[in-house]
Image (tube, rainbow, N blue to C red; front, top):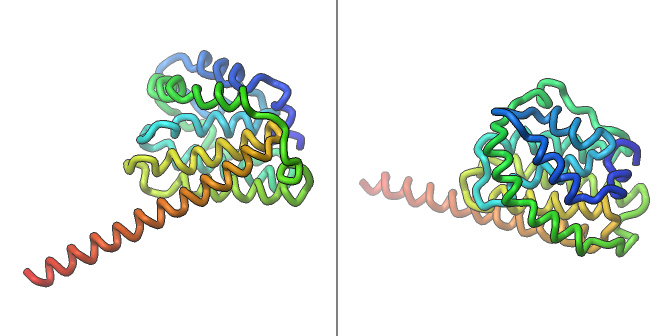
Length: 214
């Protein structure tokens, strides 16, 4: 798949991420600078990199919408089997380099561990046009969940971010086991969000009942 990152499977994934972290100098960084450091042929590596700040229980405020939108567009590119369109205004958006670097350094343990155990497996989940479209769609679903307005609630960004991480590594490394973990984590994310919504509605109903009694 030209441009969406399958060629990146030939690169040591952990080394690629470490190289980008080392590139984060100065007060701020743009997504364009991050992508240029990775290389435009590594879109799935770029997607993996964008999940790392969410591997901590509460992530940096304000990044889930921008990062999630980029992941949606990468998912569309995977489904269409072509390089995704990334709007210049979004790619020029700046983020605090020091906070981003700190979050990334704490999260790269995931990449080092997954990089060591990830191997090609279950080719039925990683090969063919149909599965590319299914996996691209699941990537989009995970990105949409990541963009949900629950960022201050612990694990609300971590779970969909982890699902995207598993899916992207699975597609990059042709690892069907990682794809299955991505599917499972997406289901877990959806259940967690449903719990949050139902709990919020119950709390709101209780508040309204209390106000009505008063």
